[in-house]
View 1 (cartoon, helix red, strand yellow):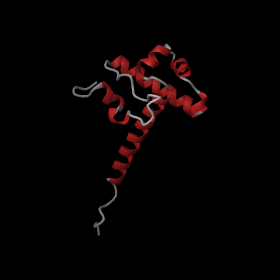
View 2 (tube, helix red, strand yellow):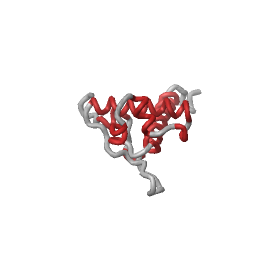
View 3 (cartoon, helix red, strand yellow):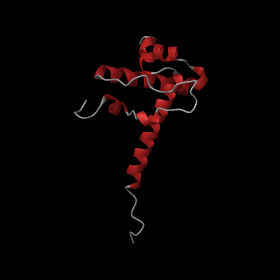
View 4 (tube, one colour):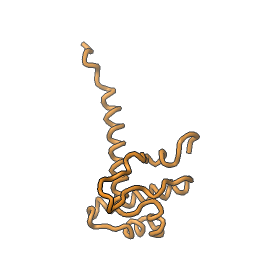
Length: 116
């Protein structure tokens, strides 16, 4: 990891996106990975969850399924995420950030409105 970049930044985590209106189900991350090993595990959790979400839909998987697919103990998933909804929110945040970056780079290729 490069100097000056936190593990959370390397994962694409923006703590400002980790809030919710319904206090009965937390979607806040429990904590961000600090070491490189944690970043790798965090990303493995997200990748496994993304695959399950695509295959089964939101209601078709559990945190235990994510751990099984990632081949890690379920406690490792709960170390970062309180539930599957927090995982899905993180996936959504990453997708939104990626889309915004893609759109920004795409719009740079358009000529200015006064190009003529």
